[in-house]
Image (tube, rainbow, N blue to C red):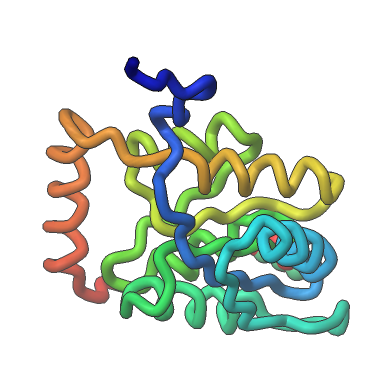
Length: 168
Ligand code: RB5
């Protein structure tokens, strides 16, 4: 007799949990801490680059550390939060190989992985609860890149990345 498992694995959930680099400025610090505790309780490997308090801190310092960790393969994915998530996304996207996506809810966070192969999630901590933040991060981590037509578009961005020069 063939054993039929009573619960099929969800098709879009990767088998192995990705390792995650976390970073925040002062505005995102509390939310980062809540996300970190949640991910650790769920068995994710987490590397936290700071910040460690609500003392004023500059978001690029943390964005660059997380982006470098992901670009160099120390972590699979990154999660960054500041007041709006905007500064973190701008800064992280300065690092070659990084596709940092600013998401506003679990749906856009999942689409960032599915369509854009985002390897860093950024979001705004101001005005959201720890539960909402955790849901956004879960949306991102549970999704996987769909490839296909999206791969062609990623390749075009990778080309831009490789040709990147400063035109400021
Ligand atoms: C800090 O006040 C704020 O500018 C920062 O957290 C972030 O929102 C920048 O994009």
